[in-house]
Length: 321
Image 1 (spheres, rainbow, N blue to C red):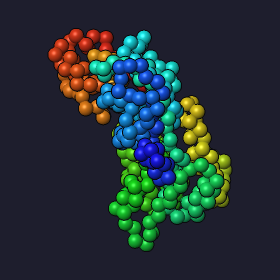
Image 2 (image 1 turned 120 degrees about the vertical axis):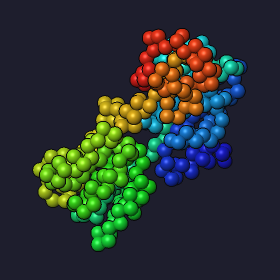
Image 3 (image 1 turned 180 degrees about the vertical axis):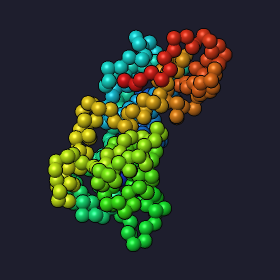
Image 4 (image 1 turned 90 degrees about the horizontal axis):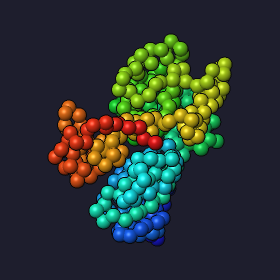
């Protein structure tokens, strides 16, 4: 089997998100070959070859977008684009920055698998959630501690292993270790965090969670207000809330947490005006009290040779399409 397809099959079997990038068209001169494929993981690890380093860097930017919203895109890299910053959402046209020139068109298709639903606790509501969620398209994991001998360090380790960015998390421990659970989740960009709690307990937990650096709000009490009292009814109200949030983001009516964080990470290369992920680019530097990001070494060198030439009317941090 083709090694790229074998890697895709391996990731698919593990439920690991990846993007498949396929070269669908080229115009010489370029090293890319029509039909060539590459698998891109969320950590930017690439298996396969679809072009040089400049092509690879832009492909990773577009793959980030695909991971964030689940939408496929056609990326067109051209030496003479009419406007390298204009997109219509599914077709993205950017300047080809490779010295060889040429045109490369890549179809980038995300394979995200089922979203993760993490249920913390073993209360009657937690068990009802696990049972009801079996009928839904989620990858479900339950994290439970021995309530007689609480090992909070073990709790943190298990949550960090189970929870991926974009996960939906419901803490249904009935107050046993819910505060420790939300502390362990800080810094992870979640799609949903709900706590099964009374309104009074929920208010205390919201105050504990409230922090400008946190990635999202906390829902406590979790679930839609359907008036349910039985554990199964409460479980259904929580799952209804989760499904509603998921479909809003999948249909594009509300940006996902991943996409919001991604938009915050991107800045405009002041030389070529490409969008650059400031967290991952190899080319950045400080000038005039600001960190500037660049798509490649020539842009970085050009900027620092004559920074004033590139900083007038610059829109740093421009929102991604």
